[in-house]
Length: 83
Image 1 (cartoon, one colour):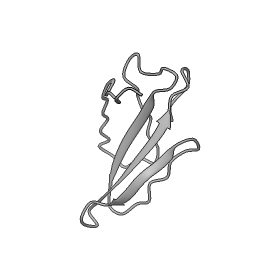
Image 2 (cartoon, rainbow, N blue to C red):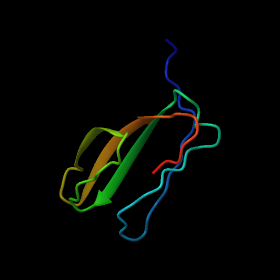
Image 3 (cartoon, rainbow, N blue to C red):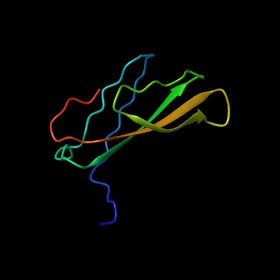
Image 4 (cartoon, helix red, strand yellow):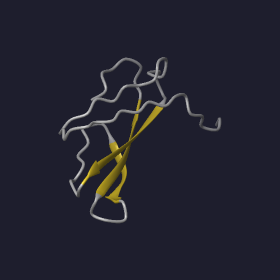
């Protein structure tokens, strides 16, 4: 088994409260068998809910009630819309 490598990194910043986010993959990364990791941080103590097909790895407050982070993963299937 080959050692995992990072194919690319994308980030997005919301300046207003929103209930939904779109994950933009780096060009060329929507290939069968790749693994996508998504880190989401929100202000406050909201519970972060992932759509079907995503596996949450961890979620918790960032040391206080000021923000909360969740990490989730999903394997790529080669051609899909990421929401």
